[in-house]
Length: 452
Ligand code: ADP
Ligand code: ASP
Ligand code: MG
Image (cartoon, rainbow, N blue to C red; front, side, top):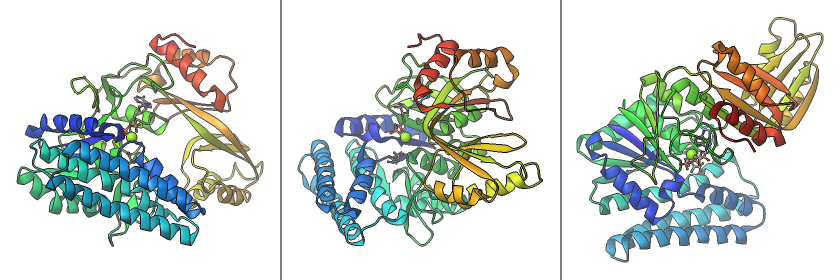
């Protein structure tokens, strides 16, 4: 069997859903499990509505709920017309929209949003899209069955970014998905959301539907995990930043994981790990061009010095200076423990005898991190930085490529530089406004497009 995940743009409207149905139909022989995102833009709108409701703007929040309702109902009508089946789907959607309106009212009474209530709201995007897509597959003659993600995606209770529990997921997939597959049916599941063992709704963090797909793929020992999106595959850089970014036909797991972690949004950063554990190839395809080659991610793509460039903005550097402490054994561990306690992950680290610099891209708990780091010495925070990553499995062995990368960036101020232990990722921390020009210059150097 295979897992096919369709992202927001691949289910954004009736035409996209019909294309998706054709793609699934073309794969019936491979026994697909279908994982779907919310219709493009829905999750953003839901989160905004929750925040509006909690900050005395209930009327605005209810207006956005109504806009979402109209959009979903229009898609239902376009796909199914106005027969009895269509009315049944519309009624099911309506129940979910009423749930959403009640949640908005409750948030407005409480006057604040918790991670837990935000998950209840944000997860509605996938809970709304999945029944419509299931019905469209059935209309296309596919024996599709809707499965509630909360029965199979079992997580801990870290709301907002829940940790999946792989053993519980494997057991739930055996109970709820395997029998459907044996009966020749096509299960359809919303990505991104899950539930704790006692049934409270959680989410895996933004962009998490890719991660759902790979977790289900690993649990079911799939032959392949397919990510269907709005670009031809993984490209040599983000096409929204670099003109002329090229398709990567074959890439290694470790390279794809580095690119995803350093800004290549086409894959959620956690997608690769479950696939690697089971050695399941991951493919990325364009749902607008289903006949395209796409990208194949496996262990054995040839080692190149530079496979692609990635970058991300809004990076914060935290610097700790302590002439007394840092040379002592255990000092770095103690510093990292502060980040761990505050659930803040560190991307890049550079140390000297008297200082350590670390980057984070999630500043939610930064005040608490900084407060606790003061125990070690002077703490400085620099906002508005960006990370540029040059990624290639053979980079560490290629001095000419390293030299070309450093030459290409020009006389830009570098705040930190780091080469990963495996030599696969050269990361450069620059000022935020330099992110795009540096990415373009690096891309031009390694992939021969004209820098602007
Ligand atoms: P989906 O809704 O299908 O999950 P996303 O918007 O999450 O789609 O991811 C696809 C987007 O990722 C592309 O439109 C593109 O702008 C962005 N992207 C960033 N880096 C890359 C890259 N290296 N290759 C391809 N796409 C990339
Ligand atoms: N709908 C969720 C989001 O927008 C998850 C996803 O699309 O992967 O973040
Ligand atoms: Mg995505």
